[in-house]
Length: 177
Image 1 (tube, rainbow, N blue to C red):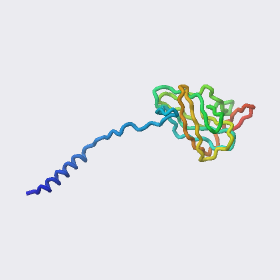
Image 2: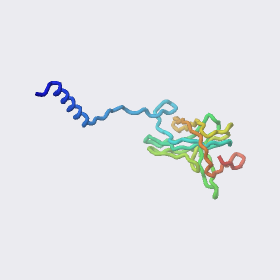
Image 3: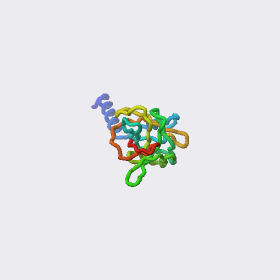
Image 4: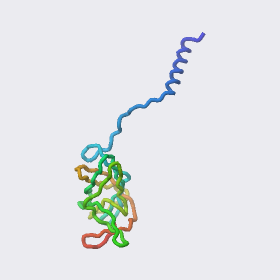
């Protein structure tokens, strides 16, 4: 005859074995989305942001902007605490020489898509820097959108030899960022 304790232990083992074969999913709820400067959930995020380390008076900031909304988002300007002069630039061909030019109308980040800021392409340009930006330093940048929202991020400075583009300065001289 099987003892009551043995039957109970066998029942516990059988129940445990049956439950182990079942799977359940636990709803942990939504993860907290990143927040924009207004404290609202961010609809635009930046991936792999960085800025070119420099001892010159200007430099470029880069990364991939991702639009998680169902509408195009229009970036119209940028700012940084490092300088009062921040512009959105693109690279245009002038003969065989790539030349940076301001994008006064900004750019669109397509609904559900991305917009790449990269050397040799569109980028955020910090100009009239008062001090060098050392490799490893973090630089704050804010991108402002037509709807009044903005996105602020920290861009780590990296050493980069440049994409060979020139910038047509106010006096007509070209400079490489």
